[in-house]
Image (cartoon, rainbow, N blue to C red; front, side, top):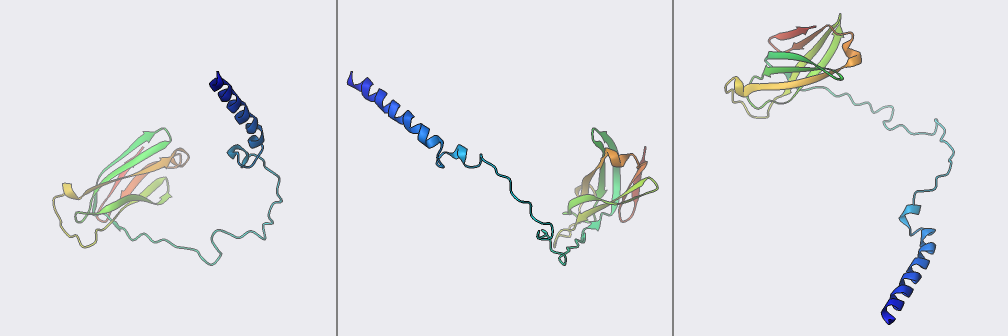
Length: 161
């Protein structure tokens, strides 16, 4: 009989303390709940993320692959996917990408570039030197494009609609 009374009084005391904790800063639900309006900073006082004199120009050090051997353009829900397969000069080329070189007269030109390996000069078979890369053309850009051209060092491949 003593045990249920002690248990009941312990529960009552614990629950009565919850009313005090719910309004205190110890309760994690109160930490970020209240917002206040703040004065907006003057645009002249804002510091830019990149200062005016610090413009970084990135140059692409990757070289063009030797040949483009295959090119496909597949329709997708958001536009089209261009997939190209090429041959690198040696084995070990990596970081392949189809780089947008611009659109002129409805022709999208993509350069097939890849990073050369450092200190690895094994030529190997053509199959071991194959690289595949893809490029996504968005629907709004696709409206002005009639032909896709992928450029390599020795040849180029085109695909027209």
